[in-house]
Image 1: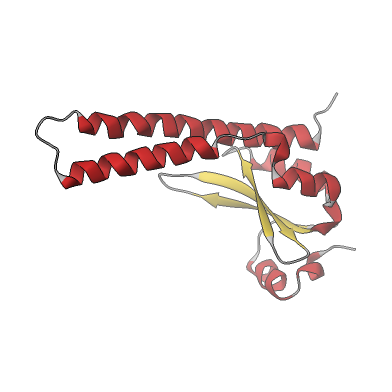
Image 2: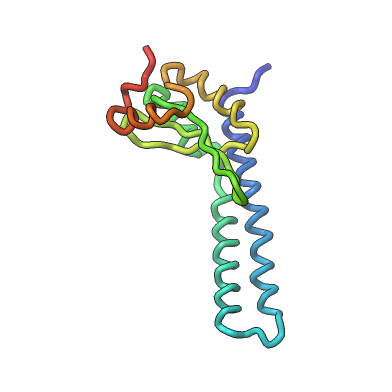
Length: 155
């Protein structure tokens, strides 16, 4: 039995949330460890501690929540005809991540977190429920989307 679009999307969201949680858990101790440095109670260390704690806590908070309640799932489930454009958006470098972007008829976009390297699985699953949407990124699609999003719907 094949996996459903919903289960594939949830799997990708869970993987992303897990990575955020791990990053947050790794950052928090760094901030607290800086506090233990002898004779380093200068303003710079307190600033570093504060930033580390805030970033770590923010990453952990972002990792919380039920993946089944992600905005993208309600759109794909309840309003698939609103999706006019689907493409992969990758961020490379030290903080690499990936999303499948849903361009909606109202001109807004919704990001679906994707496991880096497995974007094609996610975009393929999403394409099954939005057959009229334009697939893939192209600068011409971006211009069309900005001017008239519904023009990206395929007949």
